[in-house]
Length: 335
DNA sequence: GCGACAG
DNA sequence: ATCTTGTCGC
Image (cartoon, rainbow, N blue to C red; front, side, top):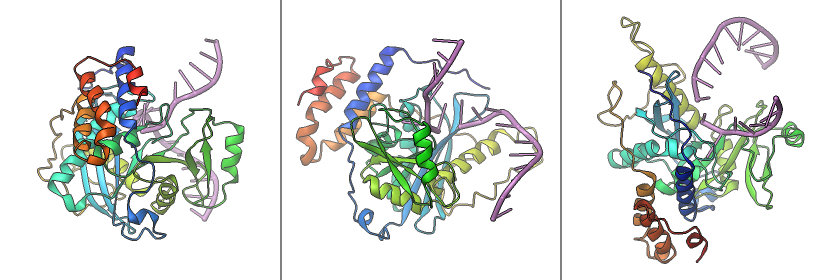
C-alpha cells in the first residue's frame, strides 16, 4: 500500500524548522572532546556507528531506518538494528534532518537502553554537518540530540556559501593523488566548512566530510579515511546495505513465499540485534515533534551547570516556540 | 525557460 | 532516495 508523497511544507513550517536549527546550532561542539580523537592511531576507539534510511521504491512514506555498530579497527559488524518506519516530513534540501533524524534518535535511544555496552563512540551520518545552508546539517542535528560525536559524510557537494562544483573544483578533485588526500572547502566567509576526501586510491569521486558534533574536522577526515574499505565509510555502507536488504526481505518476497529470504553476502550477520526485533514491519514509531525534541535536549543540557546560563534563553525560546508563542527573531540574535 | 537539488 | 544491464577493469 504505497502512500502518497507529502508536498512541500508551507513557509510557516520551514520558518519553524529554521528556528529549531538556529537553536540547536548553538549546542554544536566543533572540536575534539575525546582522548582517542587526538591519538595518531585512534587508540581507545573500539566502536564506530553508522546510520542510514532507505526507501521503498513506489512509496514516499515507508522506509527502513538502520543503525549499525562496527568494531574498530577491524570494521566488523557487532550490532544491527533495522526498522520499518513511516516518514512524516517530505525531503526538502536543507531540512533533511526533519525527515530522518527522529527515527535515528529512536534507534540510538533503544541501543542506549538495551545494549549500552555497544554504544558507538562516534556516528557516521549520510549527509552533511556544518557544510550546510545554515551551518546545521543532519550530522549536527543527530549529534546534538544524541550527544554523540558525529561525522557528516556526503556523496555530492552541497553548493552553499559560494561553494560550486565547477571546473576549478573538478580540477582540484583530479589532483587528489592517493587515498587520504583532501582539500579544504572554503565558504565565502573564509571559513573551512569541510573537506573533499579521496577515500581510497582508486576512487574518482571524493567524499565531502564535515563536522557533525564533538570532533574536529581534521580528526573527522582522518577517521573517515580509516574506515573506508571502499569509497563509502564502512559504517554507513553497512547501514545502507542492511536497510536495503531489510526492505527487500520484507516487501520484495511476497510473490515468492516458497523461497526463504536470504541475506546478501556483503551483509555479514551481526553478533547482536535489538531485543524484540521482529521479522514483521514494526509499528511506526511516534517521534517527538521538532519543538518538543529541542525542548527535551535543552532540558537535559540544562542540568550541566557549565552550560545552564548560556542555554537559559534558548530553553525559554524553545518552550515558547512549542506553545506557538514564538519570540521575535531578534530574541535569538541577542545575548 | 534554466539551473539547483545532502538524502 | 529510487528507476536500471551490461560493461570495463583488476
